[in-house]
Amino acid sequence: MDFITQPVVIGLTEHAPLILAAIGFALLYKLTGLINVAYSETITLGAYFGMWLNTTYGLDFYTVLIPTGLLAGILSVVTYLAIFRPAKRRNVGTLEMIILSFGLSIFLRHGLQFVFGYPVRFYDVPPPDTIMVLDVGVTSFRLLAVISVAVLSLLLWVFIQRSRYGLQIRALANDEDLAQVSGIRPLAVTTLIWFIAGVAGGLAGAFYGVGSNVSPLLGWRQFLLILMVALVGGSWGLGGVILVGVGTAIALAAMALQFDQALYAQLVLIVAFVVVLKVRGTRLTETAKV
Amino acid sequence: MNIDWLDAFLISGLFQVAMVTGLALLLHLQLGLARIANFGVVGFWGIGMYVFGVLYVKVDWPFGDPWQFLASAAIATFVAGVAGLLIGWLISDLNTDGVLVGTLGFATAVQILATTEDDFTGGALGMGGLDFPFDIGRVKDNEFLWLVIMVAVVAAILLYVWRVHRSPYGRLLIAVGGNEPLVRSLGKSTFRAKLWLFVVGSAGMGLLGAMNGVMVHYLDVGNVGVGVTLAAMVGLVLGGTARVWGGVVGVILTVGLFDIVVQSYLPLPEEWYSQAIPVLREAAFGLTLMLVLLFRPLGLLGDMRRDKLMGRIHGR
Image 1 (cartoon, each protein chain N blue to C red):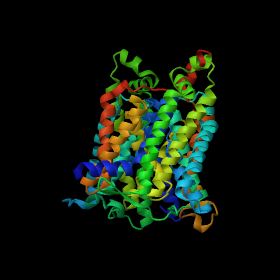
Image 2: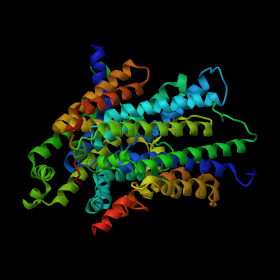
Image 3: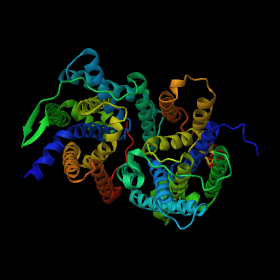
């Protein structure tokens, strides 16, 4: 049974932040139509925010999660208000919007090195406890990441599907003009979407950071997988993203256990995702909302 | 010819400017005409560089330079072209999001293979042994001649791009960028046009990568990063994606400014050169990309001449 339990446990615990980040990215993509390359820096900055709060103020990892999520959410909103909203008002096209977000990503990635310095940084946390799950040892941080993903996913689903704001978000995503006529304030709702996506990305970054280290390329290294999970899974809504994210996490772990090089697992997944997108072809819709 | 006034920094900086200009010109055909955002420029460039390096260093050729170089470079260009064919086919019917995944995925795959296949590529340690296919004396003389050859290759690419602009194929690419379904409905094969675009563009990028390998003598996985794509893209966007000379002007103003003027002539603290300057360069490129797209999306040179002309004729 090890060949099943090991990939499942290792995959879910190690790559839970991927699922969380993909949920945030997909939310932004599905509801605003923007492929935001700079989302990778929301993840990176989440890791840096957490590390800064942890090492500067001596807060433990669990305590830093809330301010980290809030700071990342605010950063996400600031990028929307300062960059993407003005760009939309200037009628910047879909393609240019992606390039714009690419520029923002590069600017943030390198700009933050002036703030946080060049060396790789680490969280100052005691060695995590190891808990046995199905005979596989898992650190407490990783287990917390899985629980956080599960709880946040549930909360997001309830929020999007059941709450008044969720209804407004879905209405805005379907038809902005009609939503406006119905009394929905697009700015408030869109800002809310960017905030939630930022919180998810920031928390994912903190979990990535505490699991290994904090470096300027942390988010960028995960971005392609996040993008692919969100694009492929996003067709079936939030549930689809979670399912594809879980599948990706388990596949990554299973292949990493099989191959000598963990990078081969990424390579196989890149090919698999591109083939899926190719097979689906033009069924993907191109949107240009923000 | 006396080239004593040229220092090694300047030759290296000029080589970078020429090489990135070549990449920007090829990207212009994809992004500026057909409006295909190739985020995997570094992948095609990198595959050319690594295939060339492996063939040149690891294969026991029955002949020496310059034939060894020519054979290795030709095969590297061919392989990059085949990669372009494959990626072109994969993304031909995908929208912008799919193209982003396909091209970025390809660039990542090249980086992964360059890291993992260390028997061939040297992996993270890198691979040396690359050299000029000639020896005309001092290192500086060889580098200068290589720079001249690179400028000649980029001039040939410029000529090709200029001719494409004025050909039926170029007009087809512009139409594809404007309204692909309409072009298809008129019976034109947009699939074939995009495929050819990717084959030629990727082969050209591969050749430039191979030539870069010769100049740097050492292949390092760190070089196959997103910085190459960024440099070509920011230059093209700044100059103007729609204009033939856009890439040339933009790369001179970005890569030229940083790699030559800032690095060679500004009195900067010594300790900045190891980390601060490269970081500052990339941050400045990112900022430039944002500002241009926000405030002057058509770049410094603006729209295509034919569009300007049509605008004047129709009073737009």
